[in-house]
Amino acid sequence: MEKINILIVDDRPENIIALEALLQRNDINLISTTNPNEALRLSWEMDIAIAMVDVQMPEMDGFELVEILKSNPRTKDILIIFVTAISKETKYAVKGLNTGAVDYLYKPLDPFVTSAKVDSFIQFVRNQREVKKKNKELEAYQKELIKAKELAEQGKRIKENFLANMSHEIRTPINGIIGIAKLLKNTGLNEEQLEMVNLLQISSDSLLGVINDVLDLSKIESGKFKINRTQTNVVSICNAVVNLLRIPSLEKKLELLTDLDPELPKFILADSLRLNQILMNLIGNAIKFTNHGTVMLKVQILDRKGNNLQIRFSVSDTGIGIAKEHIEKIFETFEQADEQTTIKFGGTGLGLSIVKNLAKLKGGTLEVQSEEFKGSTFSFTNWYEVLKDTEETLATIEKPLQPFNGVKILVAEDNPINKFLLVKILKSWNIDLDVVENGKDAIDMLKEHDYNLILMDTFMPIMNGLDAIRLIRGGYAAGKENIPIITFSAAVLDTDKETAIAAGANDVISKPFEPAILHQKITDFTTTG
Image (cartoon, rainbow, N blue to C red; front, side, top):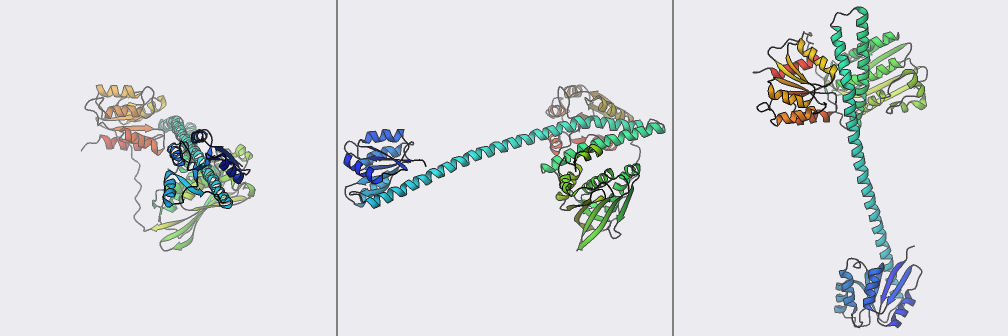
């Protein structure tokens, strides 16, 4: 235990000896002096906790000594006990307490009272020091927490930057592959070539799906993922997913079946995109891990409450199944049942993790029943509001995209494949265009020529698209500050789109893009009146 230093100040040595004899104990150090100036030096140099000061002393009385101690930041917290033989009148006690003392002891000293009072003050000092120690520890913890928070925020920023860059670097070439594959389809291919182009599209779509899974998971973890509920035809969604996945099931000679409750309403209030994503992942997984037999999507109504239905979507298969000890593991990010599963079947281990997170965000529950080597059933259950039947909008027959008349566009794109793809598409629409490879050339071209619209890639060398947009909006090309600008971005995080809009872009198109969407946006920004 740390010893407490107690200073005794008295001009009479016999009084000091008597006090020392009375207070002597193992947990305190007694320091004494008959000189008030010496007392000041000791108080300054040593960690004095309590000072027992005689009031009447030559040269400097006790009141003056204590006033000096209390005026110094280094000694102001010393507990002062006055020891006096003068009158016990109230005015002296008040003067002492006003000076900064915490108590008075009157001579002749009562041994029991003196010992008890000093003991209580020693305990007070220990408690006070413990509080200070805890406060220092708390301050240290606070500093560590602030540092940890800053590191976490820095890590989050690094992660988001990495994801944005990864998204751009990977999605940009995929955009080129998908776009050129679509152009190839329209060049009079024979049956064998068409089959190869279709395989090329399937492979690139699969790669794009993996990238989207990673980005979706990042959005979910960062709390930026939103559920948007709209009028949804649940039967149509189920049929569309099954039809889309029928080809891989036929390739494995599996039966892909549906069992839809006949009482399912036509329309419910749901996030159709995320429901589609859940079903795609569950059915895709079932096909992936089933080598023979069947995969079935079953949709049934479990309960009704007023205008709400509890609907269960179950995907059952006759596949490899999951051992009991691995069931929880399969829902973890980048995890599969075991290493052999990854080696034999491939995959990132993201699908079920995303399904689990989506189910939680949608307010539903995800359950799994499985028996190794016999098959599995994954079920997603949620409550949905039933919407009144309305006339479903008839799907418009896809029409050829009409050419433009008198439209001139400036294209800024550094990737050669994407540049080739854009030029090919825009020229097929009879658009007059100039093409540059960086933002600096774009703003210089704008100074010299007139355009109806600029298509600007976000990431380019020398000067990126966002910096170029800011200069245009700032008046770099006089009189052309308000020209419509659409940016292309392979980054799909909401923050990237917000940044582009904040820089002055009128709209953002994510890569890979659908030509029909680009055609519509060009129409919107170049049609006058």
